[in-house]
Image 1 (cartoon, one colour):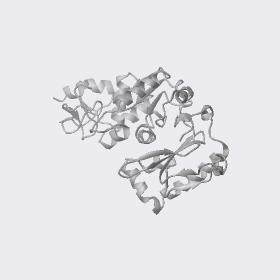
Image 2 (tube, rainbow, N blue to C red):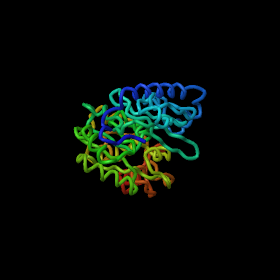
Image 3 (spheres, one colour):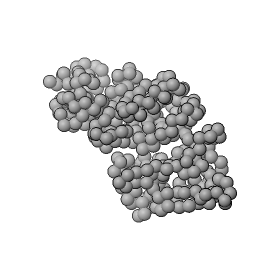
Image 4 (spheres, rainbow, N blue to C red):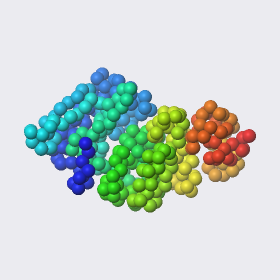
Length: 317
């Protein structure tokens, strides 16, 4: 259980920090050992690369563990043991302080559990200070990891870790308010819309950019990527739609690996030519809305439907 009381907006005490540090380091070592081979394969199956796994200190706890409360600075020996279940560890660091540790059990079904004594936080908040003009708020930790991997060079990616209580958001909004534009990337379902509407009460310069549903049952950004969605194309589309201009170097880098149509209007709009013609295809949904109308795309990568970007299709029909 994560702590949401009045003292929740301070990093956990020193004893918890030290115990968490030892646990995190131990789990990191296990992930890259023979014991963690299946866990590492699971992370790779989610599309996560070595760099993002290492940069975020993911680890693996190979078996259930029960620590004495005093070891974590939580009460006395009469208190229940601190349960550290078997699973993949996802620690939250902000300014070199450990705020919480989430552990994911995986298999046919996955379940996430917080280590007792942690505090709710906006993961990645410290990266917002004095940085880029655009921030992307995603739902959970795995959404943040996949977004950081694909678009983290161009926008700052943060997550509330699925904790959307009013006190938590009211405290952490101070990191979001100085950012010029905040994009809210949640699912297009009722819950995602609810989260976007809630956050907009606290962050007025925020805009919802719903995640497309490419396969039935998809609910988040990770699902979108695993279903074949192209995060860079999707982000570029919404930045263009909102009239958001990134610094020249970021904009060029974001577009560099993305497909673009040959149509004159598109060339003017995106300022980048593409040598290969776009092809018609009906086998994959539109990356922007998930629709299944005809859409044009080169190399089978980024794809738009006629509704989301008619010029892309009109110039190639």
